[in-house]
Length: 252
Image 1 (cartoon, rainbow, N blue to C red):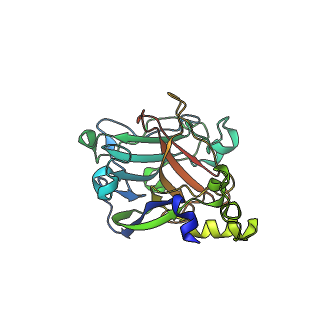
Image 2: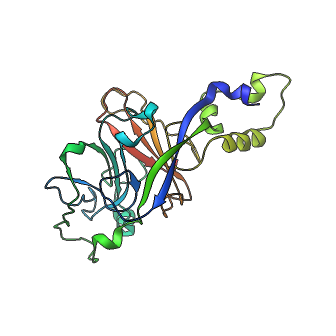
Image 3: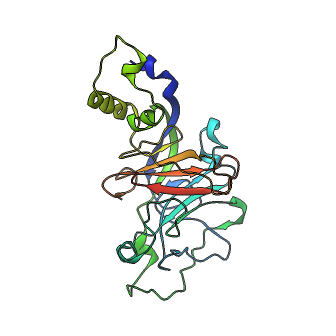
């Protein structure tokens, strides 16, 4: 079975984590992020409310084969989780290059552990405090290498079906779908294949219209107590040529 899917096998990395006292300058889920010197807390580009910090990865902490997967620096994700913004915004949060999401790579030489609270007037009139919007920090202490396979949705796009591959091999669509989902790692992971839930979204670079590379998957209720849509997954993509073009999507 796996020999038939060998062309769809990629190396992926599962983050191994521990909880502990927060250290801003670390690779982690939740906790306190590092910010650039003089930078105040990032605000949502749609509602101007403070965004929630989800995770950061320092390229120096990645597996040796992946240290340049997104370049040199610290990858961060902030996301507006405001219900009011969901209701009133003209920008559905799950789509790429969205003002309600900040995904970026910052120079580690320009960061500080000092957190400056935002100076803003909240349009939805709720009391926002930094300490109330933290996820409990979970530090990435190591990585476990895993074999990751393209799921049925990805292979369907590539027009590869096990029945077509071998006339003597019989499997119905439901069995193939379930098998592929079993082989595609569904949790938080670095590199490998995105584990699409409902349908693949083609994420193109706005500079060159080239399909962007998959970098990281954030699953619902894995290392963060947060659910994307109907228990979907979130994904970070980056253009291999224009590396400043990096984005986040979920619920596809």
